[in-house]
Length: 175
Image: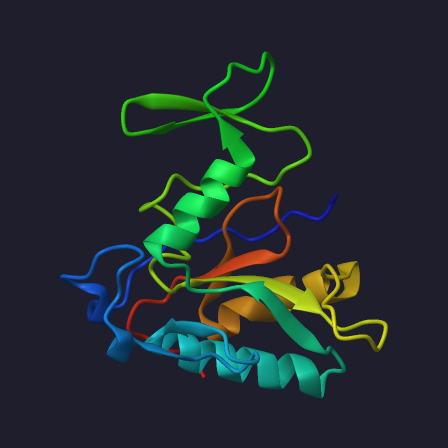
């Protein structure tokens, strides 16, 4: 994607103090306005407002992921990384072990370090063709996010994943 995604520093909401990544107390997690997907409470409220605004502007917002338990993070990571050395492939450390990213996979954070595990990240998708499966985000929706996401406290996290956005505004829900 040629368009530069805005990446802002993350400030965690105070409700996450004393919590463990991927092991959040159930009371912290709330529906975020996309199906039954969950986020940490301030992020969920902000996401509801973001989704409502995007839908008002004609986007059919869906998601492929939000909060991930530690076990879900571990399963995802192990599906995308291997301890078998793969020359030229990106690496990640988990514990004291080096893992190589498998070809044709998106990157994943080491378990226990993901913003999904804090209930702050959304992997956005869209409904574009009338079936039940969400599609990848369109360039039109990504441009909408670039113009509007900060209003709701969201920022991209990495340039290589235009679908992956995270709540960065701490306790200051901007809606």
